[in-house]
Length: 107
Image (tube, rainbow, N blue to C red; front, side, top):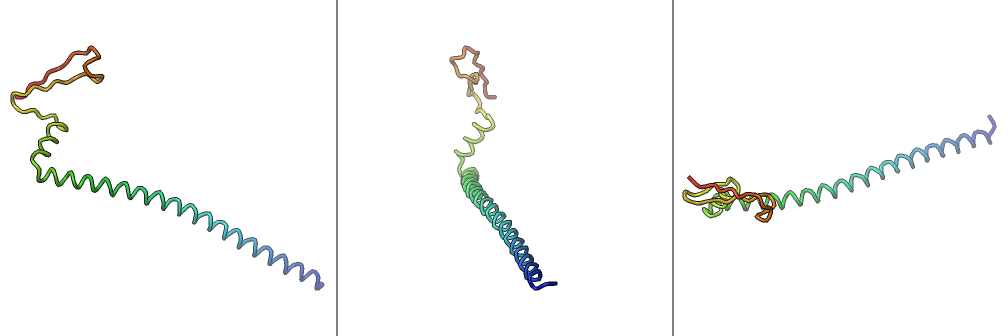
């Protein structure tokens, strides 16, 4: 084999190796960018969940120690009524819809 041909083969091998390296680096950079974007999304989500946990913890503490908070939760979330109280349930559009008003009397 002639020296010129050997040199051409060596240059071809170097170019191929450099091309493979560039391809691998490019793929790694793409994956790194995607991972950073995912990290940012997850950090934002963690922040929202932390805030929600703090709100729920404060509510839990109120429900454990504050009788008024317990009563409010029972009345509004469970629909509890004291004896002798009358609850008026309006239609979904409010009193102006012309729909009837239902009264529920406490036991």
